[in-house]
Structure formats: structure tokens, C-alpha cells
Image (cartoon, rainbow, N blue to C red; front, side, top):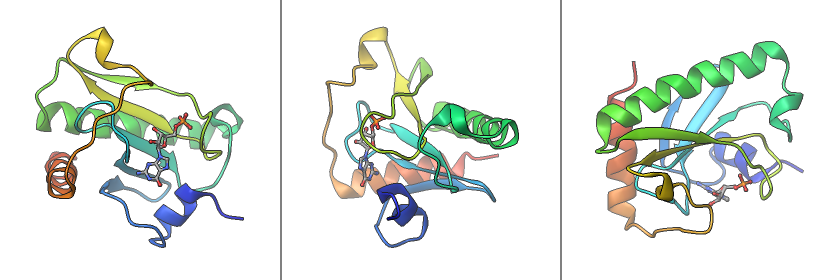
Length: 130
Ligand code: 5GP
């Protein structure tokens, strides 16, 4: 059965899309730690990040770098933190989280933003993609 993230890539489940290229896809986390918390995934469904081929892993990380630079340009934050857990969804993904302080990267803390704000944040990041 396809993962929930494969269904997002296929357009079968809605998301706040940030960007995509041939191999990779970026969208807002539905339960963000901070505004603009983004997930970057390979379109190919592989559970564990470090099982990706060197080529696919490198492609994903270079795509994540482009997304992080766009987040930094679009949102007020000190840095973009990158984290990998993968304990919930068995489809490799990188968390890119805009942070002001170390305490902002807290996987037990989530905020809820209205749909129009999520859409606006995704559009602002998308507009900064190079
Ligand atoms: P992890 O697997 O790294 O522990 O966490 C999975 C992340 O995916 C969580 O931060 C969770 O909020 C996010 N997530 C789970 N299901 C969905 C979904 O259907 N849509 C979106 N946009 N994010 C999801």
C-alpha cells in the first residue's frame, strides 16, 4: 500500500505544496513546530533515509538546501534546522524547521495555524525558490 506521503505526491491527499523537482517534493508539515515547518521527501517511496542510493540521497539533500534557502528568505527566523526521525511515517523525509532559538526544535511541541495562513506561508516559500 502506498504511504500517506506517496498519496500526497500523487495528489490523492491535499497538502500545502512548497516545491518539487523531478525526484523530490516539499510540503508543509500538517502539525508544524513553527510557521513554515516543511517536509522534504523523495518521490520514490523508500522508508529509511539512509537506504536511499547515493544519487537519490544527494539529490534530496541538494533539493532540501534549495528549500531551506527559500524558507530563510521568506520567513523571519535565525536559521533553518534540519532533522530526520522517521518514527511515524515510513517514507523517508527531512524536517526543515525555521527556528529563532534551539528550543524551537521540539518534536513534542506543535502549533496550529489557520488554513489561509498555511497556504500563504507555502506560497511565500515557493516564491523564493531558485
Ligand atoms: P516523523 O516520521 O519524522 O516522526 O514525523 C512525521 C511528520 O509527518 C510529523 O511531523 C507529522 O506532523 C507529519 N505528517 C504526518 N501525516 C501528515 C500528512 O498527512 N500531511 C502532512 N502535511 N504532514 C503529515
